Length: 95
Image (cartoon, rainbow, N blue to C red):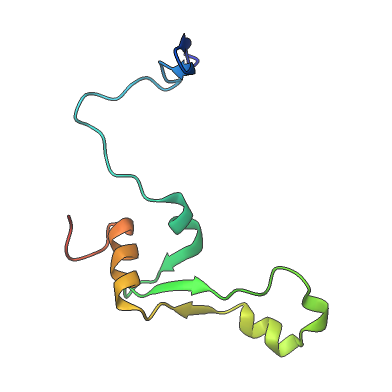
């Protein structure tokens, strides 16, 4: 079934879904896609991110610097780490 659109007061509104609708009360918490793309959690629960600065203008950077920029680094700020882990659903405290 394709999405059904109706013309409401503020323009088009999506009524139906291509995959059907969920039952009432069955809505889950989605992982934030932006965080999912930027961070990884390893097996021990350490949150890691990529270093910035490797996307472009690499001709003027040394090979050692480019290799170093390709490494993952752990996130050390405890507040950020806790909030990102909560988004991943891996935190010991859930709200």
